[in-house]
Image 1 (cartoon, rainbow, N blue to C red):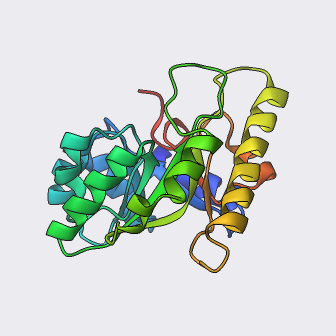
Image 2 (tube, helix red, strand yellow):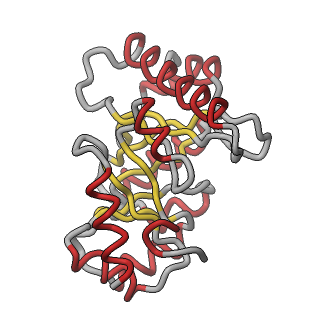
Image 3 (cartoon, rainbow, N blue to C red):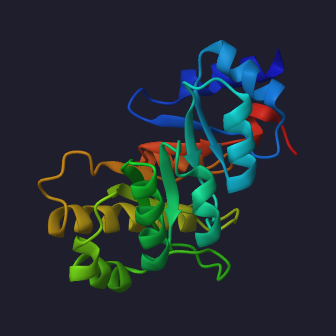
Length: 220
């Protein structure tokens, strides 16, 4: 019952306007069911094929989020059912999502991932790249994707000031995009940032979604 206690504690700490995504990557179906039976139905996975397998096994009212780096050739595995793709880090990927969504007769919600960390290993747009894309005629041709916000990952560090600054940068990017490209779009409202180690800072800085795994399921 430890998992149930963990999610209960987290939900009591997280404001009602922030969505908790239980990151279930590498976790067996029975642990996901434990959280589901508690009443939480929002889960995140970082590998498309693992997500596809879990979708087949588990209840169909689960809201599945793809939170990891997504390769173009893996989009087809999740396009029929995924609720939200967090890590859209290139126009090429967005085009693939659009194409696979059209095959499934769906419109897929997406977040644009921005590179806000000092680490080079993180993926994502910078402000200039996103502006070029959003202002392009090619972007206007995409009919089966729906951009609903932004996502970012802070540097993995003990320096909480740096983490705060990076999250603040993502909020700034969100506000600029909202003002310039999505001002009349009420569902452009999501800021996905914060994980087990830094979610409290993320919430303070304005996260609308936090992605938490180890605090729920324990360390891998």
